[in-house]
Image 1 (spheres, helix red, strand yellow):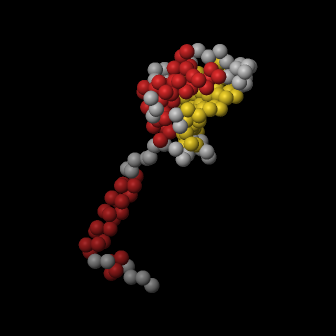
Image 2: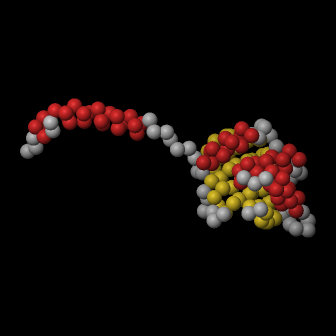
Image 3: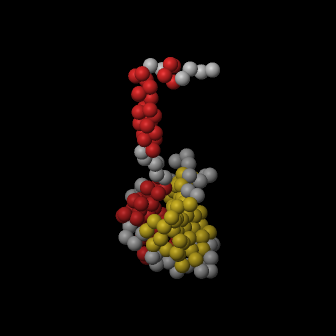
Length: 163
């Protein structure tokens, strides 16, 4: 049989023990939650690109909205990539879409805006009768994949895990 608390611990420890437990519990309760880096990047994009809004996050993908794009998302930590930007629009692309994709690529992948706009527009403009409906290219350490069908065109910009 164990001795009561009074006999095992002296008076100074008995008075200190409850206070220490309460302090420890409040320290863990007040610890800030670690935000997803993907959500942080999405918030930066929303702050720097006019008309861009953060919709919601699910399964390491943050969905965004913008008037120039039908779909827009930012993915983090996939099997083969560290970060990915996906954008979809009508088959007949408008200059606002090129500007949106170039700006978002520059901010997400920290490359100069001119280089990002050049690479993304090159990929999107190469699709056609001669080269086909799917273009895969590499530009400034970014993997670009552009696809189109009868009604829509999309671009996926990725940076590999090892880069």
